Structure formats: structure tokens, C-alpha cells
Amino acid sequence: NYNITVGGNIDIQKSNNFYSANGKVILNGSSAQTIKSPASFKHLQIDKKSDVSLLKATTATGTLTIESEAKLDINGKNLTAGTVANNGNLQLKGSETLSITNKDTDSGTITYDGSATGLKYGNAYYNLALNTTGTTTLDDDLDVNGSLSIIDGTLNTGNNDINVAGDWT
Image (cartoon, rainbow, N blue to C red; front, side, top):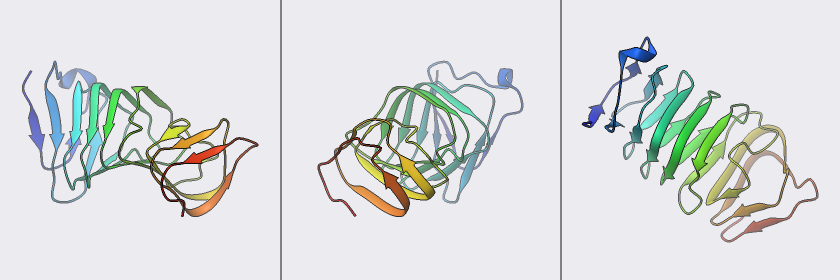
């Protein structure tokens, strides 16, 4: 039930090697970190200015928090979370499976950096950045409460509407 702060990588071999109860695992390394764990976390926090990548599918049954200036690259791995509180950058390839009960759409950035053909996070974002190879086609209306940036790749509306409250680059 206590918090654990990790400045390096997390490498848990078996799901029964770690039990988080109600505690929070906080990653706050000064260099790139990785998570390779079949164990579930209750609360997982990517601390300010941390750069974390998944090496295995990851579950945070409570809250996954990405602090400002932090990045979590799920690296094409599946992600399950109860709540995502994103003040930083959640990065996806677009091929993974996301199972998130409560998604953050009032802060942070979701970046697609792979060969995404659709938007796995859904159709509502605060900031959305596309840096993809190929074409991403909308399957419903897109609502971006902040800024939309298309760095590389093509965004196809699929006859759906796009609402952008901030800048569109």
C-alpha cells in the first residue's frame, strides 16, 4: 500500500513476483526507462521529464498518470488502465489494443508514430499529433479540444467531421 519510486528499468519476471495493492509505482529516471512486467500495477506514474517505453503489455488497474514533460511510449504493446491522467505525451504506434475506462481529453498529447490506420485512443483528444507512415482514416467524428498536428502521413476524414478548438498544423 506504499509508493515505490524507480529511477531505472522495471523488469518483473512473473506476474506473482509483484503485488501493488493500493500503492503507486513512480518512474522518475534521468535517462530512458523501460517497463517489462506481466504483473499488474494499481497506480502507475510517469514523473515529470521521464521518458518511459513499454517492452510488454501493461496494466494499471487504477490510474495511469503521465506528468507534464513526461512521455510514455507504449511501443506497440497493449495497454489497460482504469483512468488515464495525461499531462504529458502518450505515444502509440496505432497497432496496439487499448482498454481504458476513463480517458483524459482535457490535457496532454496523444502521438501516433507508427503505421496507424485508425485512432486507437478513440475520437476525442486534447492535443493530437500524427507522425505516421501511410493513411489514418477516421471511423467517426474527431474532436480535438487543443491542437491537431499532422507531422507526417495522411489524415483521411472518411466522410467524418473534424472539430479543432486550438491550432491545426
